[in-house]
Amino acid sequence: MDFEDFQVGQVFKHRPGVTISQQDNVEECITTFNQAMIHFDSNYAAQTEFKQPLIVTTLIVSRLMGMTWKTFNRRKSILEWKSIDMLAPVFGGDTLYAESEILFVGATSKGSDSDAGLIEVAVHGINQDKVKTNEMRCSMLIFKRDHLPFSANNY
Image (cartoon, rainbow, N blue to C red):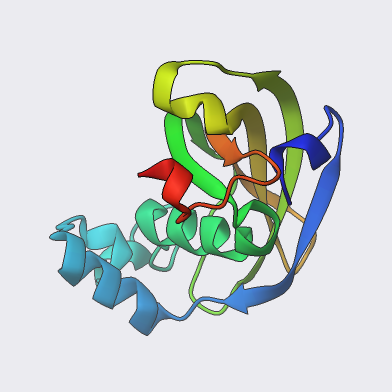
């Protein structure tokens, strides 16, 4: 979608969802050097209120944002993360679905960004039981119509 196609209040349901495994979780912890035992040690996790390993936030954020690519594939950049809130635990075997809501749409004329407009988006993670697991808010630059990301006009 081009910048001009976005309107405040639009809601997008990004499908399909993705089932996250405990193996995905362990690999993310190793890749990001996350040492928090709650994510990969079942014996440790069994002694917590959650009783099983929690999926690490960075994995959830990357999967949810990846699921939004068809809607935001003309994104020039993410300018700012306003918030990343975890609302309910996510465990291995859970299936997450992404839904996004457009909160703000505004033009920008800042130098090299005149080829893009500004939107603010709330991205929600929703599990297989329809429980909202998290909400992320970010602002993005989206290319305007007739401004291709790799055209001669952008270099």
